[in-house]
Length: 93
Image 1 (cartoon, rainbow, N blue to C red):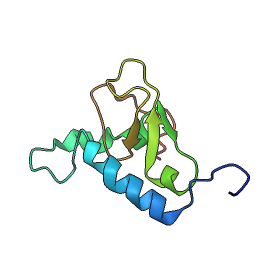
Image 2: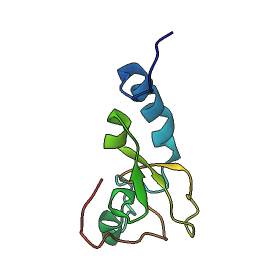
Image 3: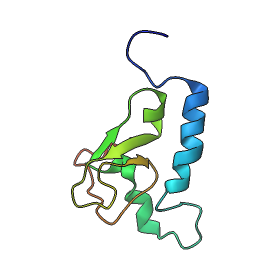
């Protein structure tokens, strides 16, 4: 057993998580009916996005928007919802 804090940098574990979690997307950018304005309303640009630590944090974070159906759930940065709130600084991820 190793000691210390889990950093989230185990590649096999991260790949397995991504494989499972990406299936939970609410919006898929490759969908032919994906509205153009959704490209600017993705989770990674939301004011309520909290990125995970480690390598998983490059693509995943937790929604902390109390009015979102996804509050307290891990979300893919390119996903989105109707409760999107843009960041005032325009940053992403």
